[in-house]
Amino acid sequence: MKKEEEEDEPPLPKPTAATAHPEDSQNSRADWAPIRAIPQPLFQQVLLEHLPATHNLTPTDISPSPPPMTEIQGGFNFIRMLDITAGPHASRYVIKIPCIGTPSRWQDADAYMLRNEVRTMLYMREKTKVPVPEVLGYSDTLSNTLGAPYTIMRASPGVPSHRIWFDGDGDDRYRPSDARAEMRRTFLRSLARAMSHLQTLEFDQAGMLDFDDSPTTPSIGPVYFWKTTDEMEGLSPQDFNTPDALVKLPVSSTSIEYHIAQLDRVWPQDDADTSPRGQRANGIRYVMEMMLYSAPLLASQKHESDSSGRETFVLRHDDLDFQNILCCPVTGEVTAIIDWDRCRAVPRCYGFAAVPCFLTYDWLPGFSPYTDCHMPWELQEYRRIYADAMVEATGAEGDGRFTFKSPIYEAYHAALYGGTRGGNTQELVCRLLREIPCTRALAEDEVLECLGEGWDQGEWKVEEEVVQLIAPEFSSIV
Image (tube, rainbow, N blue to C red; front, side, top):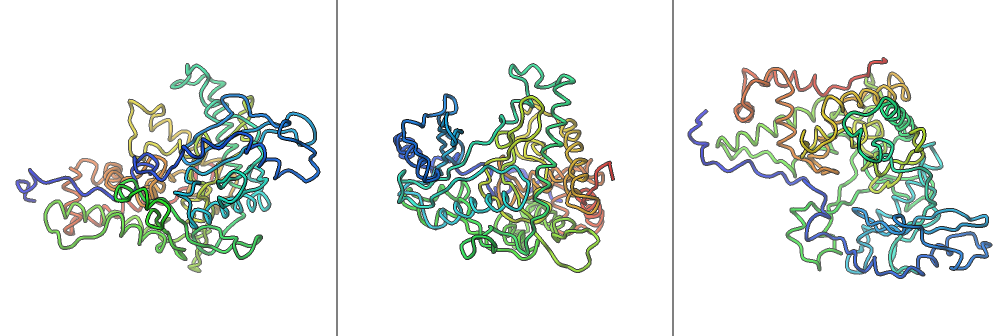
């Protein structure tokens, strides 16, 4: 290695996968002001339109939910909550409007995503026991009472799960009491059981469940995402309601298909750059390919022993975090799982059996012992509890074999597709090199440079240990 050539080298190229959600950009597609300005009476009117025709209610029978539940502005949606307090329709109702639901943002692909997300929820509610919210109706156009696309649901019971994971004053944030620790274990086991009900749904391709041709039997269609933060910087507001603002992910029939085009987009091979910097970049690509062509990323098979070559895909909740999991405040049992935006069929290692987001953070960008409340050893303990429960629910040959190591798979997925905490290809590869024994004591840059230019002496050992590190693992109860 010619180390003197590296002194003034720029850092490796920034990967094009999202390192933060696009709505954090100044050029976000979100258009909040017109949505926040929709008059309250219109929300009451649209709720009446979706109640049974015999309801005999007037807008005066509907009141805004008390603060702080009156309205909520989340990452991607604006929510109004309304209460009916008497009669057969007494309940709390949720009206959700996408943050892009305005004339200057909304386009056909957004409408396609909304209606198929709603229909996927209806499908799950009909076909499984997953505690999905009850949908009363939706509109995927601007031509309605609100002048915006929306989904109306009956509010689900329970409290956001962070309220039972932590106590109100934060005293047990780092060292939970015995009672709090037991409630956390109950919550994790309950969540694993709830998500395991999705094991009965499997599909021949990866992509969006598309009900446009049949309201009861979905085909698989493409998925549309916002462009990443960096890509959005090249757009003007006039582009935000055009296809230029979106990335279309085509349907995939194999796990390799699902990954390879996106890997080429995020971290392409560059054999022309023979500098040390270029070799390091190619070393990162080498490790990413090494993972891709190893289990479980190589093939999305229902059973590890399956030699037929047939691949099937399962549903994924794209943001399974505290705020989207409701539970009983007394017992910690899960009562509902909400916000199924971008729910789609994916390779099994990214699907329903993956641990929730809050148990993956030590493998994602931005993790710090100074700011994160759970350290890696604690997360390992919680992941083991969750994995045991998932294996118990899915069986010895089921998708529970992916659960314990799913944070590694999630980091790979986030490096390609972005995620709740973003993704970073280089950070993932360097983390892997720190994990495996053969490179733990070596300088990461040197290892990557060796791998990028061809390392006969060591690449076989790196591959052997990376394959072993990411291989599916049954939890301790098997």
